[in-house]
Length: 109
Image (cartoon, rainbow, N blue to C red):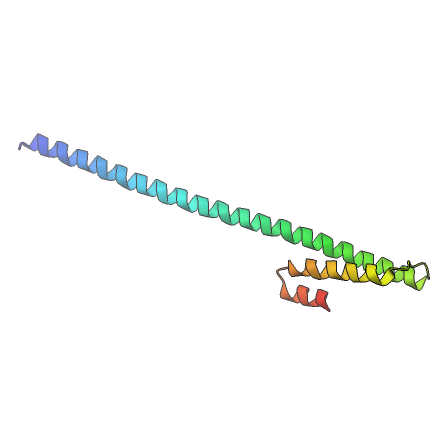
């Protein structure tokens, strides 16, 4: 084999090796990108769930507060206790979605 043929083989194998390394790098980067996107999507879903739970909790607390105001003013309905327990149940369900154990505990109390 001549030196030119050997040099051609070395150049060709180097190019092939570079292509393999480049393809492996691209696959690895793509995998990392998909993992990052999945993580962001999960965090987005958790944030939306937290926001919805927070909104439900606030509405329930405000409704409970309104029920007590009506009772103190003797303007309450006959099913006052039923409404109160329904709102407290709604508050308990919302509290389950909060990540903070301290906040969940305070809402349970």
